[in-house]
Length: 346
Image (cartoon, rainbow, N blue to C red; front, side, top):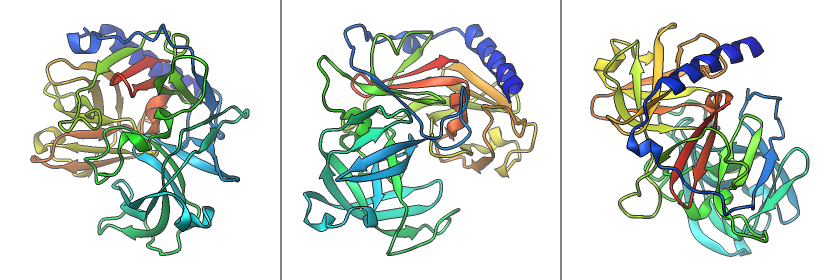
């Protein structure tokens, strides 16, 4: 694994260093005034690499759970079995969240309470009171890949920390529900944001944890101003010199890649990519994107997803979900206040 990781990172570095940066990607935030930050090591961390959905401790009201850290959704979800008496707690009303990757539809109530997140060595942060979804029912979409409907859900514990997820059947997944953007306490100024790495997550952006060769993209605002827009990016398959541009999602909640491209880009492929097909991902808007990384389908590299689910659609915007494997090559920053995404090669 280590030799493949080094080889893949060398390839990624050559792409990185050879790319010219457009003005959009050159904007750089200033984190020098900020000191409030804490590193939470994943409970299932492996030295120097990630090979599974990361997990953190999640506790509230005396309950302590082992929860998945998911940057492909927004909001904490826990099964009703873990929150006895939630019906009498402060509530923001009915809750609904759809995981399009699996086809699961979560239903329940948004209950307001503070939560504590903890890492492997015992470090922890506590949030301000925020809406937490208590799941009372699971339904399944018609095309669900992995779903079992139930009115007595069990063993659900998710920490959703993504942004710009409202347009993907997650209309209630707004920034007020992101626990990493509502950390309480501290003695100085705090920049609400985080950095995902293969071993853990930095919560709070500081001068120290943002050092290094980050490349930043400044996000637009959603038209309604309620959240940031998705990360722009481009996909090129099979060595194409005409990439398809749309959006990129760095999703720690899945091991596989989900991709939508037009027919001209797919070159006859449908459902999955043939082994050996070259995939190149760039970050930024069309005409100003910079190469991030590339791989060949099925090559077994550390940044290569376990599988690639391909949707071919000329009328749907191009899209790629990288899976958590991207973190084997890059630390990924999200600045919830300033609207920046950054990539730091490892």
